[in-house]
Length: 144
Image 1: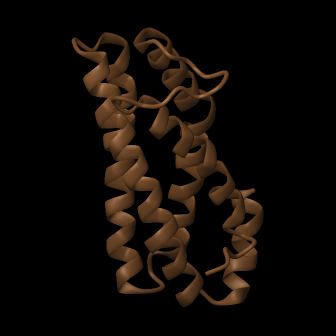
Image 2: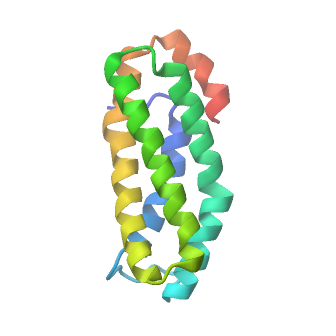
């Protein structure tokens, strides 16, 4: 399903987060110009969270508030997505003082990957299917 233009900015932002998710998983391949050591991956992840994902999560949560009453499936999924945001935030924040940062990075990579795929494969198609075009158009400036 083609992504509606109002949701496209969020999808584009997911690209960088998916690369991060792959980078920090255990036994990740080397990505050109991206960190290779655990220490550098922790720093890169923390910076990415602070500079990219915090704002991204806020936009998604604003979207979820606007659409959760549209359909019961969206309401249920909205709760799951917000809970996952909290889990991910906690993992990012725990990195700096983690006893085993490699294990936290791996868990974070797997959780982030699954979270983004749920949004792209389930949430966004539901929103596109059940939200009226007029509502989707009104959401566009909030998500850009």
